[in-house]
Image 1 (cartoon, rainbow, N blue to C red):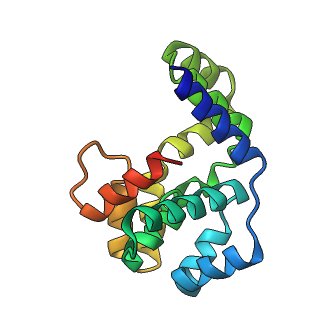
Image 2 (cartoon, helix red, strand yellow; image 1 turned 180 degrees about the vertical axis):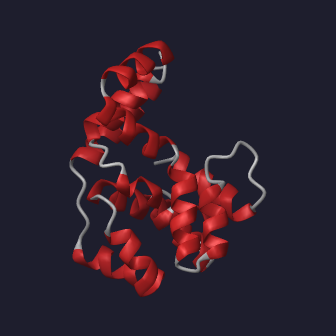
Length: 166
């Protein structure tokens, strides 16, 4: 329990203080190419930072990961870009996940938050649709199942392993 709380506090701090250096941005652009890079750069900086951190973990765990896995690391949360979910919104959602009754009360009382939360909660499907729209079908499949309990793809399982550490 205490390590979980520490992990969540660390996540909050990483999201609140997120930055992406010019060299990291250039590396992401090189991995993604112009069409996919534009999706990455439309993400809030904290989601870009998270993608870069997942990429670093993928490389640490897999040595020389496939380009598809690297792209998935950077773009697995691309569906969150329209949610406009602040660090506080995310923290509140994580905190209230332990009490669905309180979360549902908040969603009922705050329609704007409810709309943003719906996008946040459905980000895997939304992200997959965005990737399909630019022709990245294989990557879309990975993103679509990145929260699945039993993903079909080995690439997704590797992505999940890295994402859980971040």
